[in-house]
Amino acid sequence: MTKPMRLMVPRGRPTLARQLVEAQDAERARIARELHDDISQQLALLEEEILQLVIELPETSAALIDPVVQRARMITRSVHELSHRLHPARLRLLGLIPAIKGLAADLSRAMNVEITVIDDATPSTLPPQLRVCVFRVVQEALQNAAKYSGAAHIRVHARADATHLRVTVEDDGVGFDVTAAWDRGLGLISMSERLEAVGGSLDIQSAPGAQTKVDLVVPLVTTAIAM
Image (cartoon, rainbow, N blue to C red; front, side, top):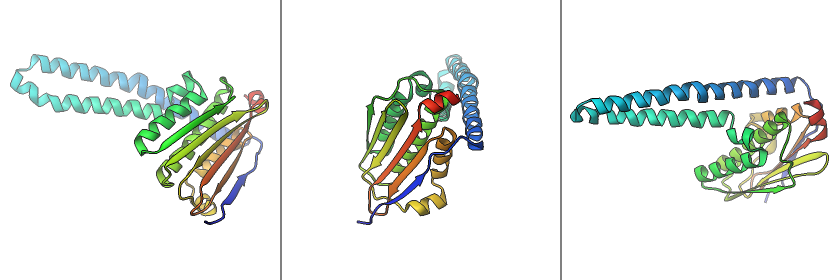
């Protein structure tokens, strides 16, 4: 087995990256709200109008409308799913750990991989920016593992003390060349920029033929003051 390589992105101070990340998240939230509150409502009305049309048409003609009804329902469902991906309601309403567990369940069903989420004293209330940051980084790590690692099992472990929150994502997959992946992107740069924006750090350990471990740390007190 190849010895795991390690890439550590040191904890930094919030810079311009913070403003860029905040702007991206604000825009995602705005688009998600518009999809849910405006477009989804219009689609629901359209579906009702089509169903009313089916009632009024002769039975022979109504059968031709059925595929249109099904297509409208599919579009409505797709818009709901897109809105959720842009800004998951679980994260805003239930908090970080329930949102991560929901994400894990969705990915587990879609990608046929077992994902375990362990919560060890993670605060139930976190500053909004920190909550979104950690969720997005974990989301990227889970999606990469589920899509590319060939893992049978992925483990997420979140724990906190008085000053820091740490989340580790580990998989039993085939691993990858960390340096090459960093050069190509694979979302690693985006993950580090998000963490930099809240004064956090990212530590990635992997190699071809070795398991992968993604470890992120964010300060709790500093971030709360910065908000």
